[in-house]
Length: 87
Image 1 (cartoon, helix red, strand yellow):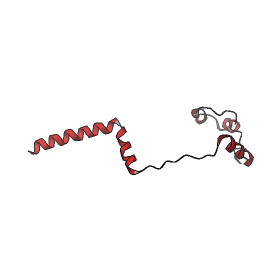
Image 2: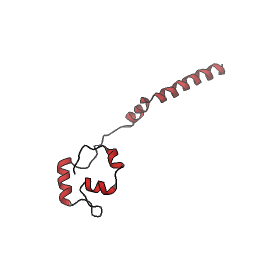
Image 3: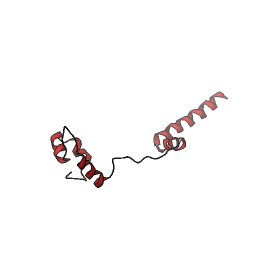
Image 4: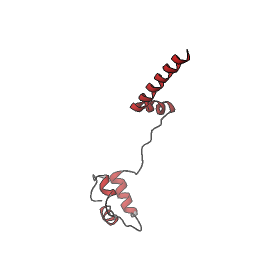
């Protein structure tokens, strides 16, 4: 592979034949075993790191949005108005 710090958008708009040359691969057979081993040694394994997330963390993350606070404010106003009208 010639470049390692290319912008991902460059690859999404490139011609397939240019990408095959760029990544030094074959369109029919893919990477050779030797090439895979070299790239794994150079760039590391192709794995995503995972995190354990519990339900409370997911619930609390919902409150990072300003829109949620707008909805909660509207709920508060509605409850106040309904409480006032019910008396």
